[in-house]
Length: 260
Length: 225
Image (cartoon, rainbow over all chains, first blue to last red; front, side, top):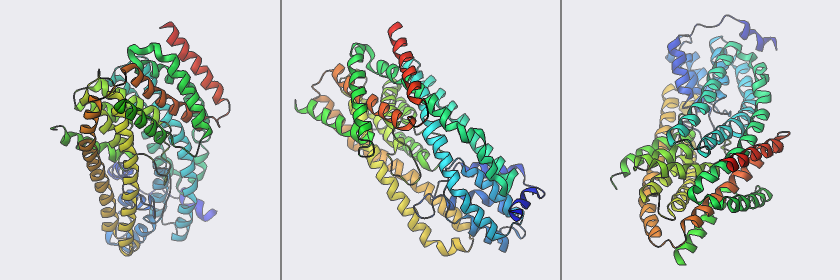
């Protein structure tokens, strides 16, 4: 434990602003080589590489090559929260932490960074922002206003998370696990789920009404039918994917319209 | 068909956003279909397709290695087709949404193939990667990014070229009325959205009451408008 904690207390290696910009830009492409064998492992190596150039001997030195090999191996995390790992791993490599400690730490980070990010972003922030966009549409906003609202809101959270992750990873190094107890990460998914549920309740009927346009008299039938169909889909959960069910139903409807 | 090149580029960029770069969610149907509609001169129809698809896409949670529909290129195809077919014709929304859903399904399959190809590429470069080769890491990353952009652009082009004439011909013989056509598609999309909202949020304590409260507010707004 002391061996793992020591580097986080050691003097912070000096990394230029340009290197940070380089690392952050690469973080946006961390999933560029996502695959079923190493997942985002190569992406982590790609992102840490600008920091590793500062190792003794530069890009041709043995320290750089050993670190690149370590950092490009299998890794799994949510792409936004992978910034925590990139910051912490860069710090560990530049602080001269023993290789076996880095490898153990890297393995231990995979699970939490994946599950926390999935709950917070994919099942929380993204649907919430989508529903806010739909609500804007339902309230009568034009295309530009809807797009800007969704894009700015979503990316305010997205980019903040990436910047925070890189910062906290770098400043806490191998002691970064405590940062995952941050209240936003612990309680954020629950609060977001409630906010998104309330937004869904408002947004879906308003969106349906606007989509119907001047046929809004049909709204009662549409909402009733969709509520019944939603119950059926929930009961079939895991056996039918929503978009495939929609594809089949609309295709059949089109077929009826053509052959009728 | 002069619009194919800009649409292919748009589909490539937005398809890339789904997974590889920069995941700013410009690939969401709400954004992608609206932009595609604007490209063919009808952003209003584009956003109608985009909103309908967004309701359906709420059910998609892009968790790690799971297979999911690729909405970026698909929404470009759907928004462009519906936009080019014009707003006021019965069935245009249905055809745009249908084209997008079919493309999203195929797009999900192409993503799986891309990931298998990148894994094959990584296996071939394993000795260099294990030796800490900077060039191997960079080239693998760039190969993945480039292949994904090409995949998305090609998918957009093929889907648009194949589905636009089919959509046009279908619209020519579309017999059901506009209210029924629109009502059916909106019902299906709202049902998927409702089921998705339940599936995603019901585990949070009290979420069902938040949903019910929101629903009352929404219905109240509709009544007083």
